[in-house]
Figure 1 (cartoon, rainbow, N blue to C red):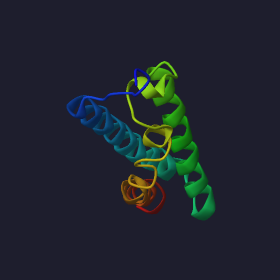
Figure 2: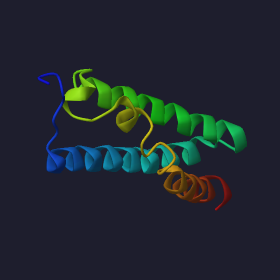
Figure 3: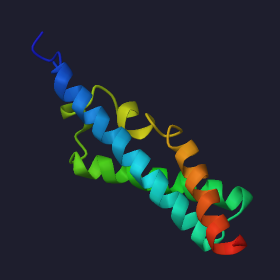
Length: 103
């Protein structure tokens, strides 16, 4: 019974907000960078998944690679919000691409 992990719901919710905010922010920054660099089609999406993988590693490093101290599972850090920032990425990717390469 002593090995059962307990979590404070408020802290878990705060940690998840931080994950979502980090992913959204880096999606926007990544979209602007992809647009400025002129990435098109598959190259842009590969860049997005690379940015999200780096974000996951950064979040794990920030947690000291002890995920179970801050989250209830590894999926919370690695996968949650992975596709959530995709729309923001595409929006800012196309916007920056249009500003730099079309206008």
